[in-house]
Length: 368
Image (cartoon, rainbow, N blue to C red; front, side):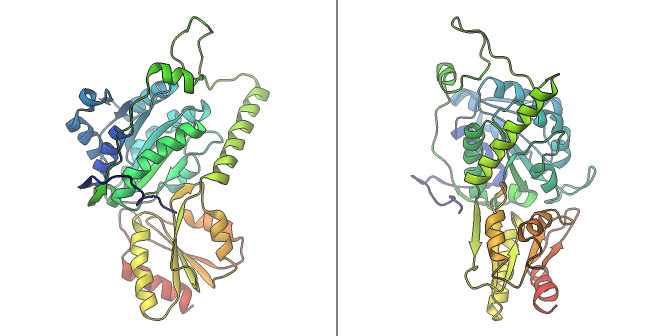
């Protein structure tokens, strides 16, 4: 379940989702942000520049010359055990894929934020969810995955920033916040997290002995590399990575269930589509149609088991996405043919409406 409402104090602010990420990054002890502006996520870097955290917490904020440069700066900072992050939107994240693959292979923690826009190509500045495959399946080369969090509110944009860093360091792997442009641009009240101190170099040496921090007198310097000319050694690396991903799948699945206890039909949606779908659930329930909603909060690890469980309880399922249908493939794999899984989506920057979801529910599931 979501932990969005669990806070030890309340400092309520009204802000955009992008701004919430920036404030949360400062407060959770982020050491460095390296990015490049692109709509609809530019407010992340703009807010960081306005807040000037280099004066308050020592956080470095740098506009790189490109997305390729920014992800490699993150790579370097992560190698030193620093809390480092970047943010971009769909085509910008495409340019980062080689660097993300290197970071995953180097088993380094970092945060990547993708506030998705419509595509393919340069596309539009309007919102989308069509980067699901790129994030969840590992958009770069090789066999790797990203811990992927899908916020559905401004509050979760802040909460997931803290959580993503925690998970990245727990498993020494990159984590991604995958938000559609609506969540990035919408304004809601948010309770910001408490301030956490940045780790000192000595604390990094103690807690992260793998980090590259120069040559201590007592040992050889660490060398972080993703190159291996020995096939067996490279396979061993891959085996270790896959074991790590299985551990993440075992321990870190997050999801939300809405009106699922007595449901005859089930909607699966994330981000803005989940918010829209919840209204459609209310509309259907008002007509006596028992519909439930599962909202994946982690896209990797995907809530496969909970969706599989409902395959034996409901008549059919419907996935709602701002894409041509990407998450639907994982839902169909989860149910393994035991129940029909239909799809309804809008593309290229268009988003489903509650009426559209309700009509799809009726035509594809209820009255089929």
